[in-house]
Length: 190
Image (cartoon, rainbow, N blue to C red; front, side, top):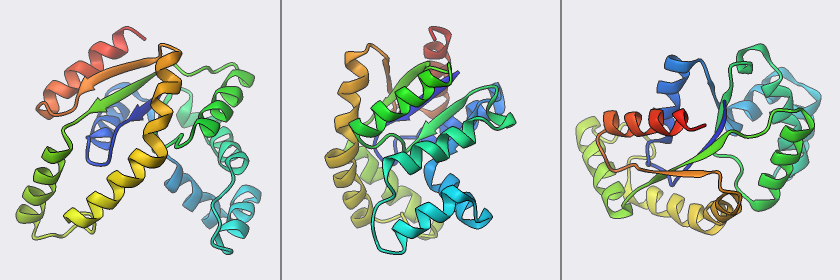
């Protein structure tokens, strides 16, 4: 099972990915975590990425794809993986598809977590009140900026996968257990 979880910040992608990691043995993969691991290891990919980051430039798609290819070849990804936060552009989606096809591991599907963005602000307020604002992303201004970036850069990728009939949309505003039930149903079709 090779999935992409898609949706704005706060939609519950990470919560559902962690649940699937435990329940089904699929690995949640965050490009940010992978990049930090490559940098810490001083790998060729990590050093190449660092050269761009040190100049304040974005890491090129080719480097990110190479990093993902290396990561999904590891033993803990043999049962499948969930990409969360990647791809962020259509070019990245196309490069990812080409890499997966080259390795005979095509994408199984894309799950979109549909949410009411005003309710996301309410969630942030409630979480901040409950935790005393312990998380750095527990404020409305950070969420507002993250949503703007999502709409500008990432949301345009969704039609690419819709055109290929790979997207299953789930109501992310339901209780977490109901979202999990719907994810499981969607995976039954994959």
